[in-house]
Length: 87
Image (spheres, rainbow, N blue to C red):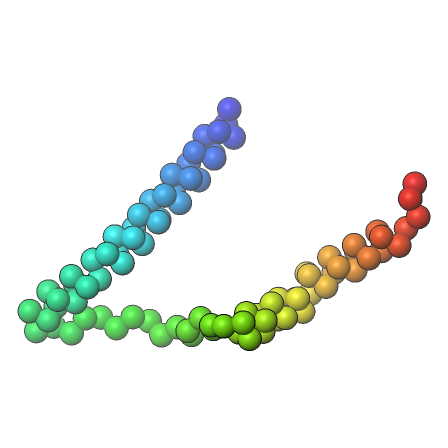
């Protein structure tokens, strides 16, 4: 039963976070308009690296992930398991 409460709390928290993000996104243009009426510049959004687009960018990201030590270790364990004779 406690697992059900933990799961419910987790999903409730996620729903709240997503609701907050949705509300912020929805009201961003309105906030900018109001700031313009009041003569205030809207707060600049933090600089972030744009998401790469296209198949080449996705391929680069996948290759970078494949070289991660955890992924390489998992692949090595799978290969060792495959090389063992069946019991």
